[in-house]
Structure formats: structure tokens, C-alpha cells
Length: 290
Image 1 (cartoon, rainbow, N blue to C red):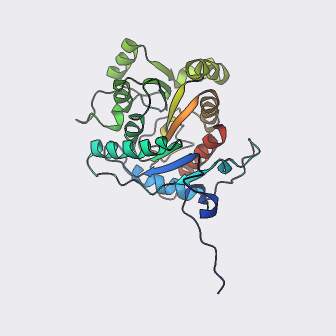
Image 2: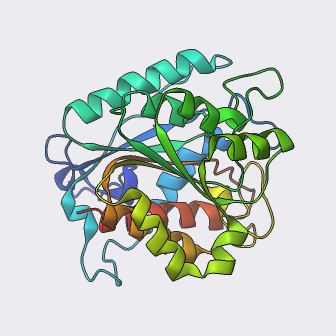
Image 3: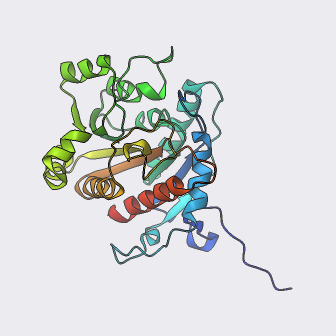
């Protein structure tokens, strides 16, 4: 009996013959977790919707004139979070990320809320830099009584003695603003990028990350809501898709990428733009990494 071809739910819709853990350079880890979301919940649905959208991303990249998936991309099953327990969920993410890195592969985590980053970076070498694209500073000591809130992610990363570079920030509390000044943090405000111009900013960014071990965290709300409306906490006056793509290119081409996450996609009913944008950004990153 003739069988109809099945549709794969792997990232990019890759069939079993096109993907395997052993041969893959990149390992996709979906994490449907949004326990601390403070405005609009629903980022737990982000991973499945991004993977669904990725099935319609063309495997041939016009900019690169190649098919980046041939580097090897494998999708793990969703990591089951512990509902209402960010600390235990972070530990599970840490173990999963360590397994991927120990196998000499690059983990790509798809969230879920920004808290998932804490699990991944906990297994990085101490000389690593975490580069964070985000509309928000996420430098609060605690938020709504929770020190593991998505609003405290960068603060917790710094407490792990990891360096950070923040890009695209345009929203923070007075407490966070003071903390940035007192600790001389490397933070590029959205206005800074606009006033300097994209290319001068990219050259300055390169000086901070060149040949360093980097973990890249992309909170999709770094983009302007007109381009990425499906996020947990949208902020006006964000970066454009082109600007974010060029920033990711500079990071991937200048440093040694140890891992990536993309977080805070919160699907909107009847609007799939953000999921497609997220899938495209991840595929671009895969293409840029050598």
C-alpha cells in the first residue's frame, strides 16, 4: 500500500533521515515554562508555535547562499517544567544543557519565559560573556516577591560571576538604573544604538566580545512591537528585524558561541508573525555560526 509522507514536528520540519543527535552541531531544546510572567502569560506556548512556524522556513538562505541546516540540527523532546517551581525547573534546564555541551554541541533553547536562561548559563565557564538582547534591564533584586522572576534574570547572571553585555534596553526601574551606574555594566540602550548608528555600534560591540566565549540570549521584546507583537511585555520604540539580525551576525561571527536561547514569544490568537520572525532569527543564527 502506498504511504503518504508524514510531516515532521522537528525544528525546520527535518525528517529523521535529515537529522540525528550524533551528527548534529546544534541541539534544539524546547522549554514551555512561564511561571513568573507578570503581564501576559502564555509564553509556554512559544516553543511549539515557533517549531510549527519553522516548518515553513525555507532551508535555503538567500543571504548566505547555502542551506545552514546541513551543519546538523536535532530537536529534543520538550523539557517538562515543574509548574510553580522556578528553582527546580532551572535545575532541570541546567542538567539538560550540560548534557548537550558535554557532547560538544551547541544548545539552542526555545522558551518560555526569560527565567530559563538561568539554567543554561549555570554550566558555562566563568570566563564566558552572556550577551542579552532585551527591551528590559532585568536587573531587579526581586520582583513581586520572587528573586527568580523573569525581571531578575540579568541580576542573577551577574551573581554567577559571568560578564554581561546588554543590548536594546529601553525600560528599567530607578533601582536598576542606579545598579548599572554603580557597577559600570556594559549596556547599550536603544537610543545609544540609534544615535551612534548601527555600524559604529556593531564595531564597538565587536571589541567587547571578539574571540570570547559567548552565550546569546534573545528576548524577542527587544524588537519593536510593530514587528513582533506576540511577546509577554511589549515595549514601544524597539529595534527592527534588520538591526537585530545584524547584531546577531556580529555576535556569531566575532565570538565563540557556546549556546543560544530565544524567549518570551507569547502567541497571539490569529497572528503568527512573531513565531515566524523567531524561527527565522534562529535559523539565521545557525547560518552565521561557523
